[in-house]
Image (cartoon, rainbow, N blue to C red):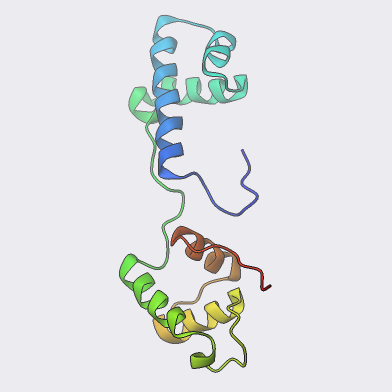
Length: 137
């Protein structure tokens, strides 16, 4: 599964996928084939094959979610500071217009929070915080 927007699964979607794997584990124990399980769960047979291998090696516990693949580099307290800085506007930070770009936000993060993030990480951080892309009118 690919994520073109640069993000991973939401926590709700992660829980949903975990529930599918755990349901499949019950059917593994009953001896159902990968094809039947894939059809019932409406997933690919390849996914069921991977789950079955994981289940054989580590049991039902191995199919549990291990949490997000990457932890945000900016915590909630730091994000609140960042939002306060962004609310001041770009002019307050020395830019000539009222447009926030990822590069400008990256510079504010580096100066104010002393954290170095790539442009992609800035985008993910802003998206996690509920910010969206805007196009000037």
